[in-house]
Length: 176
Image 1: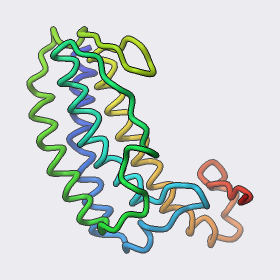
Image 2 (image 1 turned 30 degrees about the vertical axis):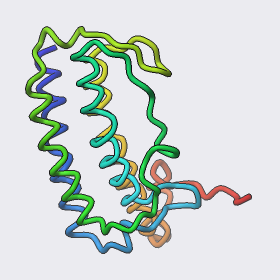
Image 3 (image 1 turned 30 degrees about the horizontal axis):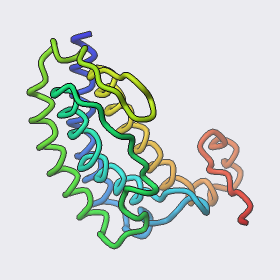
């Protein structure tokens, strides 16, 4: 298990730099482009990561350390409105700043804290160990989702190579 905690901390430490690289290198229009109606653009994924860094993961660690139950989080109701006005590079910088603070908190969690439990409003009893696994998975999932959004115009334009990308294409759903 100790190795797994090291993996989680490694993922959590690398995610901000990945986002800074994307935000500083790719054109903002590409990061703001939704892959399909109703789907999140890369910038929306980053905005969600900022929201969860503010309102979800660090507060939940504190709840678990205090033995307190905690509410769920609905990004559609409680998160920042997708398509907000902050440029991607600014969001990436904010995410990096918040994550540094979060990692200080995470470093205060002792091995004995991993079995601490609290009730999640929607999921029931969860442990600290499960929460930090979810945190790393959440980082990776939304970074992959963002890169998939960025990939879409290249899939659309690659002609006869398009079938090679079938596992990565976002299906356009009929509107309405």
